[in-house]
Image (cartoon, rainbow, N blue to C red; front, side):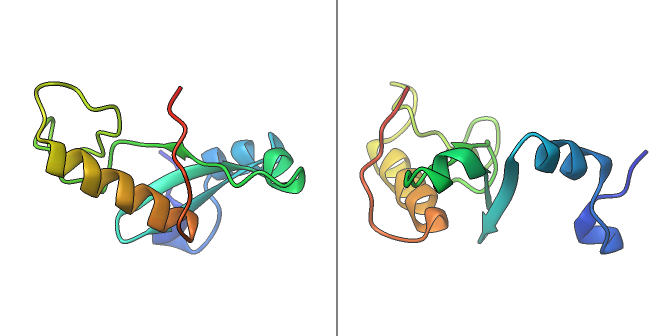
Length: 96
Protein backbone atom coordinates (compact mmCIF):
# COMPACT_ATOMS: atom_id res chain seq x y z
CA UNK A 1 0.00 0.00 0.00
CA UNK A 2 1.34 3.42 -0.97
CA UNK A 3 1.77 6.02 1.74
CA UNK A 4 0.07 9.34 1.20
CA UNK A 5 2.20 12.42 0.80
CA UNK A 6 0.79 13.76 4.08
CA UNK A 7 2.29 10.82 5.97
CA UNK A 8 5.63 10.31 4.23
CA UNK A 9 6.40 13.79 2.94
CA UNK A 10 6.75 12.24 -0.52
CA UNK A 11 4.11 12.23 -3.27
CA UNK A 12 2.07 9.02 -3.38
CA UNK A 13 1.69 6.95 -6.56
CA UNK A 14 -1.83 8.38 -6.92
CA UNK A 15 -0.48 11.93 -6.62
CA UNK A 16 2.07 11.17 -9.35
CA UNK A 17 -0.67 9.85 -11.66
CA UNK A 18 -2.79 12.95 -11.06
CA UNK A 19 0.17 15.24 -11.67
CA UNK A 20 0.97 13.45 -14.94
CA UNK A 21 -2.67 13.90 -16.00
CA UNK A 22 -2.56 17.63 -15.23
CA UNK A 23 -4.33 17.70 -11.86
CA UNK A 24 -3.41 18.52 -8.28
CA UNK A 25 -5.11 18.48 -4.88
CA UNK A 26 -6.06 21.63 -2.99
CA UNK A 27 -7.05 21.14 0.65
CA UNK A 28 -8.22 23.55 3.31
CA UNK A 29 -9.91 22.89 6.65
CA UNK A 30 -10.73 19.28 5.73
CA UNK A 31 -12.22 20.08 2.30
CA UNK A 32 -10.22 18.44 -0.50
CA UNK A 33 -10.79 19.34 -4.15
CA UNK A 34 -9.13 18.25 -7.38
CA UNK A 35 -7.94 21.11 -9.60
CA UNK A 36 -7.16 20.97 -13.33
CA UNK A 37 -3.99 22.79 -14.39
CA UNK A 38 -5.33 23.09 -17.98
CA UNK A 39 -8.51 24.86 -16.90
CA UNK A 40 -6.55 27.05 -14.49
CA UNK A 41 -4.05 27.97 -17.23
CA UNK A 42 -6.99 28.95 -19.46
CA UNK A 43 -8.22 31.36 -16.77
CA UNK A 44 -10.90 29.19 -15.17
CA UNK A 45 -11.00 28.80 -11.41
CA UNK A 46 -12.09 25.19 -11.03
CA UNK A 47 -12.36 22.35 -8.59
CA UNK A 48 -13.90 18.90 -8.49
CA UNK A 49 -15.33 18.12 -5.07
CA UNK A 50 -14.88 15.08 -2.87
CA UNK A 51 -17.16 14.04 -0.02
CA UNK A 52 -14.97 15.01 2.91
CA UNK A 53 -15.02 18.15 5.01
CA UNK A 54 -18.71 18.95 4.93
CA UNK A 55 -21.47 19.19 7.51
CA UNK A 56 -24.15 16.95 5.97
CA UNK A 57 -25.01 13.90 8.07
CA UNK A 58 -24.87 11.29 5.31
CA UNK A 59 -22.70 9.37 5.20
CA UNK A 60 -20.71 11.36 7.80
CA UNK A 61 -19.39 14.92 7.44
CA UNK A 62 -20.33 14.77 3.78
CA UNK A 63 -19.80 17.76 1.48
CA UNK A 64 -23.26 17.61 -0.15
CA UNK A 65 -23.38 20.41 -2.75
CA UNK A 66 -26.35 19.17 -4.76
CA UNK A 67 -29.26 20.01 -2.48
CA UNK A 68 -30.87 16.62 -2.01
CA UNK A 69 -34.24 16.82 -0.29
CA UNK A 70 -32.96 14.67 2.61
CA UNK A 71 -30.51 17.37 3.70
CA UNK A 72 -31.10 20.66 5.46
CA UNK A 73 -30.81 23.88 3.43
CA UNK A 74 -28.37 25.27 6.02
CA UNK A 75 -26.07 22.25 5.55
CA UNK A 76 -25.99 22.69 1.79
CA UNK A 77 -25.30 26.41 2.12
CA UNK A 78 -22.43 25.75 4.55
CA UNK A 79 -21.01 22.98 2.34
CA UNK A 80 -21.03 25.31 -0.67
CA UNK A 81 -19.40 28.06 1.37
CA UNK A 82 -16.65 25.65 2.45
CA UNK A 83 -16.08 24.47 -1.12
CA UNK A 84 -15.78 28.03 -2.43
CA UNK A 85 -13.52 28.99 0.51
CA UNK A 86 -11.19 26.14 -0.48
CA UNK A 87 -11.04 27.59 -4.00
CA UNK A 88 -9.76 30.76 -2.41
CA UNK A 89 -12.48 33.36 -2.60
CA UNK A 90 -16.01 34.41 -3.38
CA UNK A 91 -17.16 32.79 -6.61
CA UNK A 92 -20.32 31.52 -8.23
CA UNK A 93 -20.91 27.79 -8.06
CA UNK A 94 -21.82 25.92 -11.26
CA UNK A 95 -23.23 22.46 -10.60
CA UNK A 96 -23.09 19.78 -13.28
